Image 1 (tube, rainbow, N blue to C red):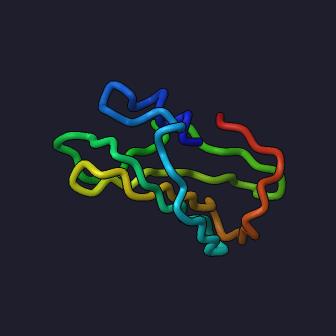
Image 2: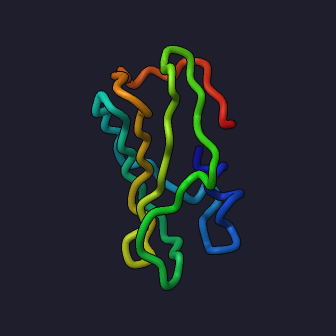
Length: 99
């Protein structure tokens, strides 16, 4: 997933996935928070980077998932997955693809 965000936002300074450390994964039932650490900075930006009209299809999740990356004053902070609809996700990564 970090590769997807790198491809979409590298011109803004989003780093290659090898330059991002995954600090912690927290499953929430309605998604997952992935805490990130990287020296890369997206200058002049605070907010969320989204999937630009794409979403994640995954076996067992009827309406799929969306993902965003949180950026706080240029620092890449967190990758968050959220389930569309009322479904619960156990955090298991079944067959999935970005569409």
